Amino acid sequence: MKNRIALFVFILFGQFSIDKIQAQTKTENIILVTLDGLRWQEVFGGADSTLLKNKNYTRDYDGTAASFWNDNLEVRRRMLFPFIWNVVAQNGQLHGNRNAGSKVNVANPYQFSYPGYNEMLTGYADPTVNSNDKVMNKNTNVLEFINQQKEFKGKVAVFSSWDAFPYILNEPRSGIYVNSDTDTINFKNSNLKLINDLQSLAPRPVGVRPDVITYMAGREYLKAYHPRILYIAFDETDDLAHAGMYDQYLNSAHAEDAMLADIWSIVQSNPQYKNKTTLIITCDHGRGDAIKDQWKDHGQDIKDSGETWLAVIGPDTKTMGEVKTTEQLYQRQYAATIAALLGLEFTAEHPMGKPIWDIYTK
Image (tube, rainbow, N blue to C red; front, side, top):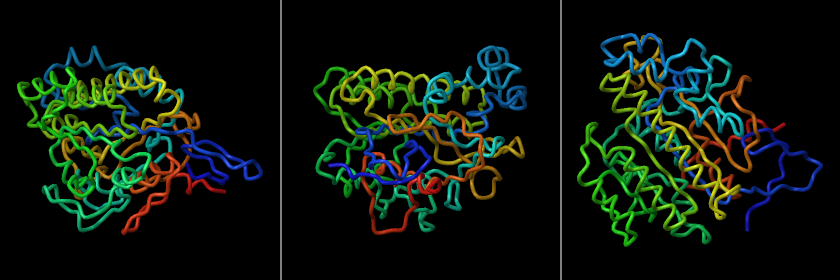
């Protein structure tokens, strides 16, 4: 039975009045998608003209400009992210446009992947999580916590391109299903068998499983096994940025937006998920921008790389569109927020950020 929430809030989940009856969340399922290292500058501003015109970063200027450039900012960001701007912005919330006063930051000091995913999923910016080494995470994550609840047991699944996720989520301890990089899916479903073949035979131009195969594995698992919590972790935007391939970085980001549109279409056509599912889209860290050549990199020595963004759409999410008021959100708040959307209070042995609604409580 979901916990009832009595709050006067203005947040991701809507606006409640203190003198009305207690409200109950409508969210029964969560889909979390992360686009590794995708900058807020592209999410809110579209293609960067300086990087687009730099031949060191954009090999195919004509083709890339035809696909993603327009002098009008609102047009070009829709060209790059049509789902985010035509669907999420119209029916949900977008946070992190610093030019409009909305700030989203990581709280960990390291500003790279493992510390970022740890913070996001455990709610704790643990200073001892300071490398990308494949070591089992000692911190309890929110997916593990949800999986321990009776109604969610065995209904949490993770599909990631980067093979560090079984360690980030401590798969042996947490007991959640994590399919990562070249793992064999090993299910009888024929579509999943085909994906086994695809992931074993496909080229790996950025060194990990292509994001489209990670997505297709997660999508077909959703259709076949109906998890309550599905997390899809993309990787290519980070790898292509590190390689200095701005045109391919944009192409990958655009393709991932199309995958978001596809999974949302599937969700909204299935009675188990329709109007009962919250989709959360974000990233693990930012990248350089003040010094343009640092767009490739991130970390505590790169200015701007602690700046991120957040997009949310679902039955408990008040339609606010692009947030243009002064606010400060932190990645450490996401774990408790995910649990709260399901009517749960995430508890663990470590400190954690509060659900995002608390900063709006009157």
